[in-house]
Length: 87
Image 1: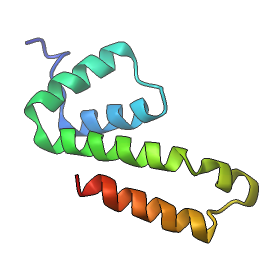
Image 2: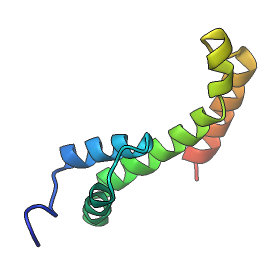
Image 3: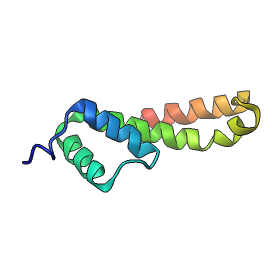
C-alpha cells in the first residue's frame, strides 16, 4: 500500500474528529476506514465519538438558549448514553 494511504492512530483520531464536524475530505474518510479495519482502538474511538455526537446533537437546542443543559436534559442524556454503551 502507498505511504499516503497508511496513517497512524494519531492521524486517524484527527480525521475522526474532523469527520464529526463534516470537515473530513473523501480521501480522509477512505484512509480512516482502511485504518479502522486493522485497528480496533481507532474503530472503537470512532464509534464512541459518533454516539456522543448523535446524543449531543439532540440536546444542543437546550444549550443554545441558556448556555447549559437543563436537569431533565442531563438525565435523558445520561440514560441514552448508558443504553448505547452497554450494547
